[in-house]
Length: 92
Image 1 (cartoon, rainbow, N blue to C red):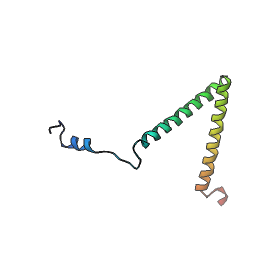
Image 2: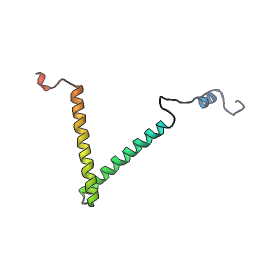
Image 3: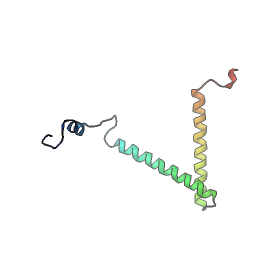
Image 4: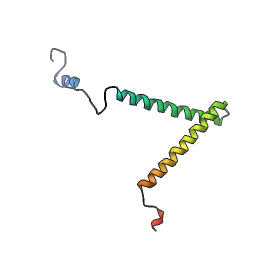
């Protein structure tokens, strides 16, 4: 044991800093944005569930927005996948 109370490997691990390509605080901002998006997605799904069971008008509006956003994302993903995979069933 050393004076600080840590042995060799423990002392090395404690002194290693993990750095990345981001400025300090950017990682925290990215996590905050992703958590915000996650909260919106879960809230939207809850409103869809609630609206299907006769929830209030605002829940039906949020559900409609959520379903529209879902369809837009799905169609954009299909278009992107078609662009990445040029082979189709017409090759016969």
